[in-house]
Image (tube, rainbow, N blue to C red; front, side):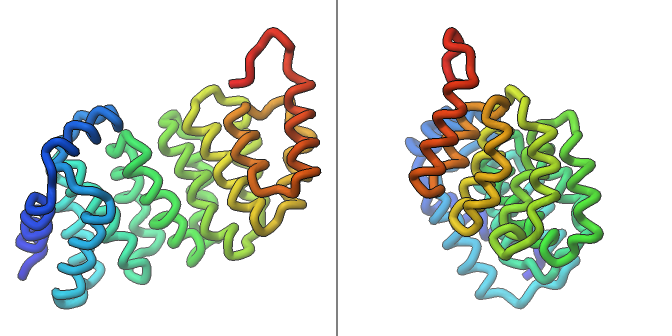
Length: 249
């Protein structure tokens, strides 16, 4: 079976489990112009895993061809299947694949596709090749497209969970901390929240002098897993340093 046939088989299986009423709900929720079939994330993952496990192992070229075939049609579930296909083949991917992934990120236009590509796919490549990939993430962090900037933050999740140096993330986060874009504010908080599970002192140290700059979204996420004393102190500092007439964003 070639990759085009496999892409169509995946689509057929997704249509078989799809529910039209769910499709309409998902399209409204994500505010997307893509076609929606109405399959859940778990159904998509099950279909992709079952069909890939039942086929011959993909080469790197076959992987890229399959992903591009799935992505080519403006169908949300096909594009989600493409993301999951990349997630399932981390050993086949490297820095040379980042131009393709960057294109997919730019075309995603929704967190539902961006976050898997950024946190899992790019994050895996970054873990394997930090010296090559960190400069690319620095470039992404200054990109006009906020989805690309968000991706430069979320790509650090996997390395940080594995104990990587915090410096690259906080350098980018500090540059973006004053942004008004919700998805940037949320991403900074998300990464700090996950870091707070394992390295709370580092989160506390970084946030303490920045509570007057961080948004409410960032702060509430960032302190979630900190010890109660540190959490309360940071949130009190955040509230005290904001003008009383300005509600927390």
